[in-house]
Amino acid sequence: MFVGPEQAGFNSSTLLADANFQNTPAGDVVDKLIREWGTGPHTAIADSRGIIDISLHHGDYDVTVTHPLTQYSKTLNISVRKGFSPDTIRVKMHA
Image (cartoon, rainbow, N blue to C red; front, side, top):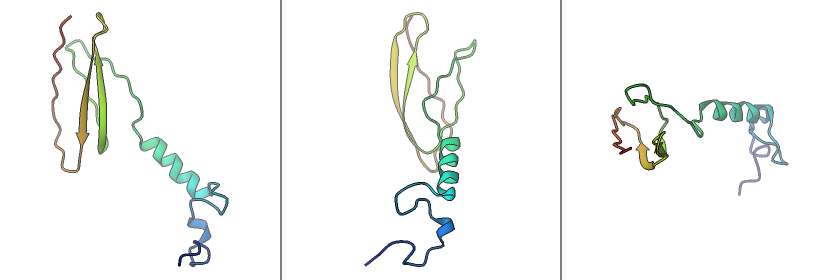
């Protein structure tokens, strides 16, 4: 039976949260890294050729492309996995 990290001999300075589930300094560092590494919602505007270059972490994404004049939108589901090679995805939209 596991009674908790302190009783199990874990070093208290490496715990991410205390007994009240409040962040420890180590937990604050991990949260900061997650915020920095995350992609979150992102808006990109295409160049004069209609091209956008983005990099994504492993995961599943819903990418919405919106035509600037007609406001017509198309949503694509993209899955980035280990070994994923860079792809070019073309989206054709009629104005």
